[in-house]
Image (cartoon, rainbow, N blue to C red; front, top):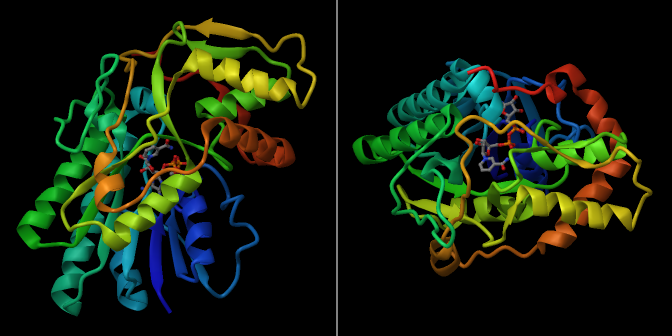
Length: 340
Ligand SMILES: NC(=O)c1ccc[n+]([C@@H]2O[C@H](COP(=O)([O-])OP(=O)(O)OC[C@H]3O[C@@H](n4cnc5c(N)ncnc54)[C@H](O)[C@@H]3O)[C@@H](O)[C@H]2O)c1
């Protein structure tokens, strides 16, 4: 049976990727240190014989034993600290998971290659944020220089460089994806779209940083998972691939669009109003990807329309409201990253 390791498999993208791989009949090994929740909500019914969970930090040397025992074809590395505001508040955690953690995975893969004389492909999940912010009409291709602005994006950029050096020096089989902002079921409530939905459902105001002008490119998590699988199967060793949709929208317009969708489904409470709050320090204005490489060379393209994906995402949170109860409100709704 084909085997895959997913690190960070209890997180938003990781748990969606595990569902995708299980549907493709992979045996999936999930390695996650369970930082926020007690297991994955999306995977709670997946205790079957094709799925194994290890409650482990990616900095552990036990990773080697797991590689040796299961001999997977691929390891998708999604374990990371991911919230930019948290990286401003407490950067050290980001160095631990996003740089040291990746270094440890590379070292365990190097040891595996030496001892077992086989390669395991590493698909490392990076981000568009490594390219820094862009002016209107500009976009970042895989050849653009890295220009990270936050401790989060700098930690992701460091890992990408480390991986490229291991490909060149030790000939490790690795590919990198740089994806734009994801949305969909099971995203942690500290991120923009789930925060908006939680506040809409609780008759709270909708906090928008600055004037809401910060613009992001958005992709549905299912399209991203398909892109990661394509890169695993067809990506060229040592290459990076941007995964984007070309759909850019600023936070204010996104909030207005969500409100238009929601109004057709439920009655909005009186307090549900946009409220501008103090901006994030160093907040990047705009990210945009040029994703021609994956489209032309690997024949991948996004399929899910933004508005329809957003509507389905709202419906998912409505039907799975108990998902919010898994997290401590104190941790998720406290404003972070202003104390510089
Ligand atoms: N969400 C996005 O929009 C987006 C966009 C581009 C790239 N990415 C990248 O995709 C990956 C997954 O993002 P996400 O949104 O699912 O994040 P998430 O925060 O929902 O999940 C991350 C998971 O990693 C785990 N983790 C953190 N540090 C760990 C460690 N040291 N050892 C083991 N597990 C650890 C956490 O417990 C969590 O379950 C990240 O690498 C992120 O940088 C995310």
